[in-house]
Image (cartoon, rainbow, N blue to C red; front, side, top):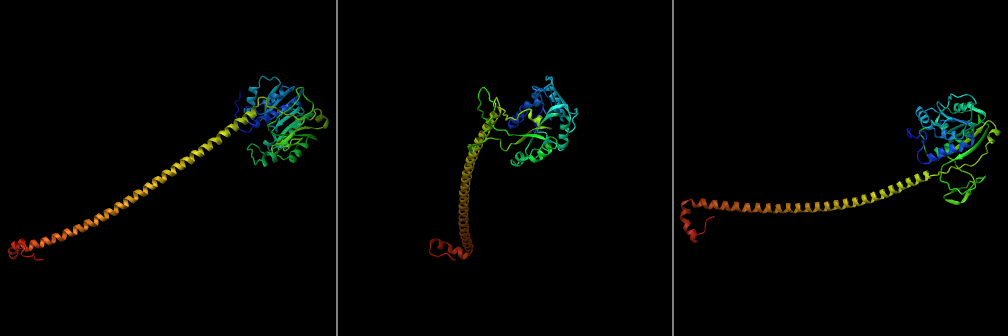
Length: 352
């Protein structure tokens, strides 16, 4: 059941890509602190994370400001007995002081302008020995380096800004880094107490580092004192995609990309062939037009010569008619009449 559309403002289960593995990993990471605790999930959205935490916690309260999200969560997760959802703003929580042992708020801080008031509310509802798990994108990595703008982010923070904001309310802080990528794990079947992180670069895989560099998100475990923070030892947590959904989605996108490239190249070949054929047709048409023009010029010249010959012939006929007219005029006189028989016999020449 999923009646909430994915708009980019909040994660919806089933949304493919790295956003899927990022959000699920944070909540799985948080379950280590949730066992038997009273848990508050601030900006719970669709409710999937709250439901996951409820499997481990004594009770979980999910809070979100969006009525549609809360209504959806109440409907979808109604069967989870130790889970409830409350519609409220994260800067004005309708909850009692010191009423939670663990507060979880992932990717909330950057979406609001009243960040100090938000953290004050969390500090108010968190029990004295409680833990806050907070995540927020590193503005340098998330936006600056990628030249990326998230339209739903109101105020992103750099590391020093985040440190100053949180440390004013929580003296003890463990910093974790998160970024989504593909992982390959080699582990004994019987399990192991320690975890070795090996980070390499594609361009130089023979040189490895032992820590995660340039994390895209910060994940903080916060407490008012060191003893509370040390109750759960720091670990390196890795989320494995059991069904390889992210990788299959990546492969699907790569197939689409390969197909698009092949289609583009085919279209380019077809366009080139059509352009060549069109060019040949234009050349043939131009050649035929030039030949036709030459024929018309030749015909025009022929017509001009014919016209000149016709004019000459007409002039000759005119002169002959004038001569005949003179002959006839003379023939009509008596002298002409007397000379006519001799002229016909050839004994006399006709008078001019």
